[in-house]
Length: 89
Image 1 (cartoon, helix red, strand yellow):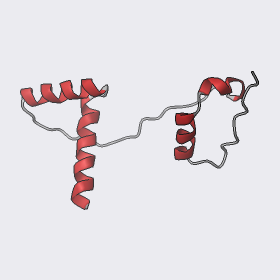
Image 2 (cartoon, rainbow, N blue to C red):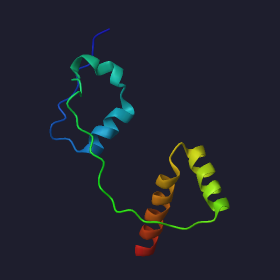
Image 3 (cartoon, rainbow, N blue to C red):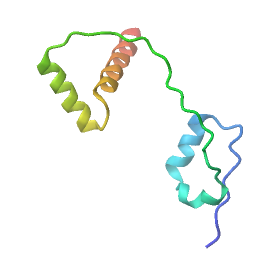
């Protein structure tokens, strides 16, 4: 079976690249890929906000987040963003 050639993605947006790999297996392109050893992952600096929540609410949020396979603070941030988008109309 012939190996597939990875398309030139130089001018592709991150969205286009993501869509490509949602429909294609990376295993088909191993030979064309480079190691990402020199990638530096930088976590964006975000201000911290403190909230006081009831223990039962925190437990429920943690349980819901675990079912979705994400951290509970990530779930809270998602909810805040959703509410802000809805409020902005």
